[in-house]
Image (cartoon, rainbow, N blue to C red):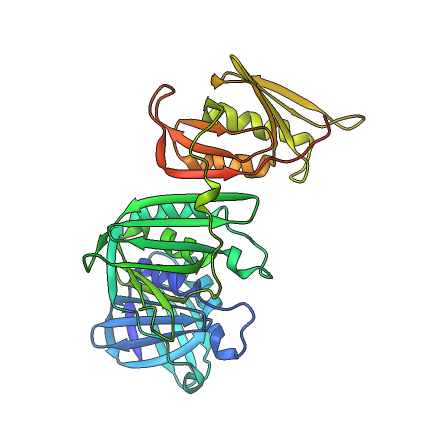
Length: 376
């Protein structure tokens, strides 16, 4: 096997595929990236048996062949090489990587022990890559990190004809985002529970493509695979087992108070005041006409207070939040202003975006935040 390719194409492909490599594989071969030079293109593959990725790109192929090399090492080498054509050559049981005057020799892994990777399910629809990346990022922040509760580490994907709804929760907050897509089949509906980290990685990495193709295996399929593809990159991932908790009833439809705040100064203020505490200690907020007071710390400990302008509609309210979760939500709305809707000081609040302080609330993204108890 021998081929030459430009540095950007190889690095981009290797970076994509290396995301699927396991850090603690059940077999050594899963540490590897498979390089397959065939025809006029090179196909890279990587897998941890739960998630599998492939990338293909054009190359000048002098000798066809396939080889398995240590993936993380290959990724580091590709990123470090100068922006010059790279030649990869299989020489016996070693792989030579040459770029300009830089030369590397890599060991090979057993190709015969490498598993057969699953095929991408049939495309079920497409969505603009920037819409998909933004929506996934807005929701994935609310997914749990505790692997002992796997259902909560996922993003629930619900497709109803031309609308996709993403939802994630770690029990302390809930993020829900709706957006339109182009289904391949009219009237298509399905649901899936995807790993939040996998989904976020795929969405972020595919943003260079104009559109992302989404593929969901039929519910009758034993594999329960979902797939993503765009511009020479594909990824398949097994859906999580379990049932995502019902969440729609948690989103209140009315409120006793709404506050509209400019996001940038509010976010800065939250981060400043939270410096005297940690994420397990509540940040106290008092909303009243003309302003919101932020306060953290008590007693003999360090304390901080700050007041910023707010547009309040309804009765004054005092509430406390986890400062990290509040900051996450303020960043996620992605608009200059945020509307916070309250139904009570001990009930969840809903964050939605606004482009203007007196404009309409943007309802396609909602971030629900549970209040924290604090000693008054």
